[in-house]
Length: 371
Image (cartoon, rainbow, N blue to C red; front, side, top):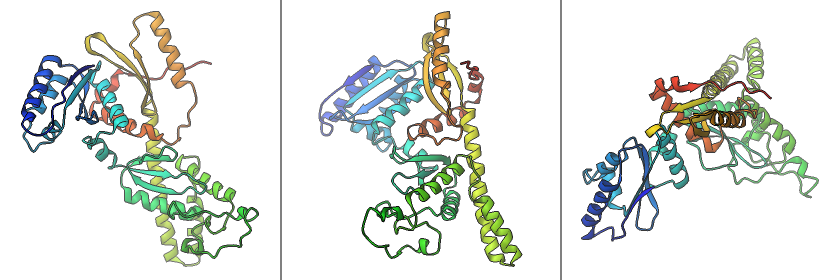
């Protein structure tokens, strides 16, 4: 890594001198190669992380920004600039993402904004999990996330129908839970129901001893089975109920059930497309690198699980074969939720191949693995 580090005051007469020194160090040290760079303040905290196919040109561009531009605002607070070269633009893109994910610099709003374009279905933690639609993945490593989806409103309606059908709660996280199988542990009587959804039979009532922890857990398992494509969930039950309502001429109720079926069917279709997209992003991707530093990226379900130098000898080919077996050998359910740590990488790779469809020609199917 090349580094330019200065420690004068950020404001006052020394500002122009500091910026001039930073510019001269970038001019003298940076090369026009792919890489990532960091800009940090006096205290060493990273303010911004970026990447470029031509690091030198990109960094010098900051010194040409107009005062009101974002680059100039970052530069006014910068006392340290560092950069690191990568073998390719793709490698720089991955390195930038991982640095942002680790450091979360306050000027890197683009990734946060991009993630908030998408909706995710979150299955919360705790003794009585619930389904919750969030904009962008929150930092909750104990939760499960399904997505990403577009159209948060449609997803919320479908999740509400799924929760109502299965009797899952939607109350606040801090509401205490009291299952009926806890009555033997605590000598208290049944609490008076205070939840309208419980009273109208839309919720099992885990907060008012309306169900056992096992019963509630079974319903959560049914919700996950639907989200993971292992079950149609309540769609069949809704359809039978809708037909019965029509026979009884309860057309308003039948229409409401029809709408629920349509929302859940649309959600099921989006989940199927997502699973297909994830599985289609499983391959070996060879990327030419600077001065022959070609790399092979082992991509599984939309995230880079490992990388290695492109093999040039029999020994290197055997090493890559062993690495391939390690990455692709262990079975993974096709419908498993995307781990929180991988969501932004899945979006990044999807965007990369959408913007560079010719790069798909560099990919190779995962070779058949023999036991």
